[in-house]
Length: 263
Ligand SMILES: Cc1cc2nc3c(=O)[nH]c(=O)nc-3n(C[C@H](O)[C@H](O)[C@H](O)COP(=O)(O)O)c2cc1C
Image (cartoon, rainbow, N blue to C red):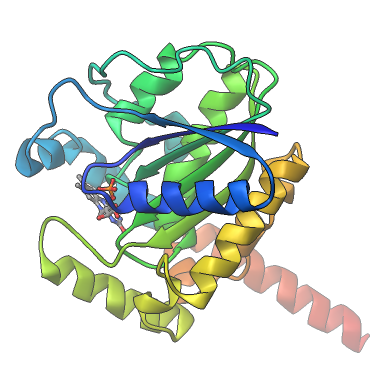
């Protein structure tokens, strides 16, 4: 199979993952080409964070209501930046396309620009890969990044068939951010973030699964193991982010089931 791996990597961590995925695909006999997505002007870290400041309020609201969070994730606007001319502006000759980036609170602006500019996406089966600082938290990492990408691909007639998101254990803003993620990882999974890193056993296994599913080309992302893996279980974060209504609903169903079971 002919595969194009397009990636935007600000600090090099996602590039490293892109190269590992390329190696894995080549070792399975596929032909791989790389597309480095680059903004014309790379912002320094504070304007970059400022650009998404409006998002943080919305994120906080999402903790109160599941419905709002889902609406927001599917509809949030991603600012665009100018990107350098693409080496492969038309992807129609490829059997599969992979798109990768580091999570920048939301989908990076360079990826939004890429998804708008690139031609030949119609009918393509696409794999999405990412690095982020934390563990693969369902609500905060996986959904926030991959759902908007899946929606945008769908609008272009393409489908996201496989995903993988791994920890780079690096956060540009402060080591303190890493400590927060480390804490969340231990609370949610009982494991340090190193467990979910690119070079861990988990990382290697999930990169393999990602490539297998990409090649297989399952058409619905919800069938993708990566998606299911990230969406299984609720854990403490899930409980915290459930709206009071959802929680009451769950309690009611459980209660009814118990009463019915007893009857
Ligand atoms: C603006 C910005 C926002 C970020 N937001 C998150 C985040 O929400 N969650 C997270 O785990 N990491 C976050 N990170 C950390 C990066 O996702 C992480 O360092 C990634 O590995 C960077 O890869 P790259 O430089 O190759 O794109 C953020 C980094 C930046 C610059």
